[in-house]
Image 1 (cartoon, rainbow, N blue to C red):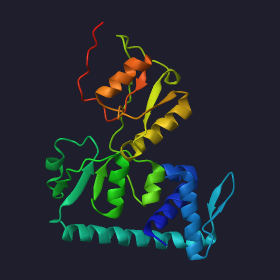
Image 2 (cartoon, one colour; image 1 turned 60 degrees about the vertical axis):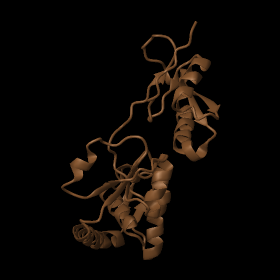
Image 3 (tube, rainbow, N blue to C red; image 1 turned 135 degrees about the vertical axis):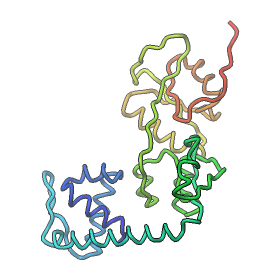
Image 4 (tube, rainbow, N blue to C red; image 1 turned 30 degrees about the horizontal axis):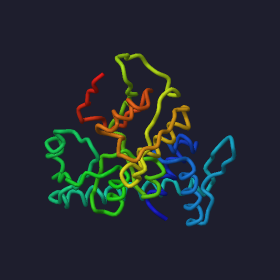
Length: 247
């Protein structure tokens, strides 16, 4: 039995709907259901009566709910106390390609922040938080990765992705008429590749497989010119100047 499972139990008990609870907890619905079943096995009681249409607390669930809430409050208080004791310990932050430029100044009154210089892909940063080599990471992370690493996430922003094409037109294009690049270097581009494959399945966009790291940089624009159709830009953006081609 883990504290996160108890938090999952409280969320489902308050929502009485697994889908809403999963959204609230930012985890996948099947993962939430599995964790609740695991908690029920550990406790030896059924916490919910559920069918396809409804979810309800069992008498055991109703009896345990206030005790679980009290236990979680004690755990939170313990964390707050420990945070006060460790106020002089630096918080180690990793990031992928972006962080607020004034982040250190903004948190100076709360914690001593050490920004790790090892800039690595999102899935690597999430793994580092999981193994304890850093404390926090600003990265793109999927719900199934959070469940796999037993991590929690908070949304701090949303990226608008643009389709880049040749010419001077700026009108919108249907997603199905775009291409999305998938790189063979999964050690670097695993998070983007999985998003791109899912984007293509959901929209009908065309997957184009590459092996030159052209998700970003000058090679990206070379692919745009070669494909002659809009190519979805990654959230890492493009910082390299475009190279003009002579006619």
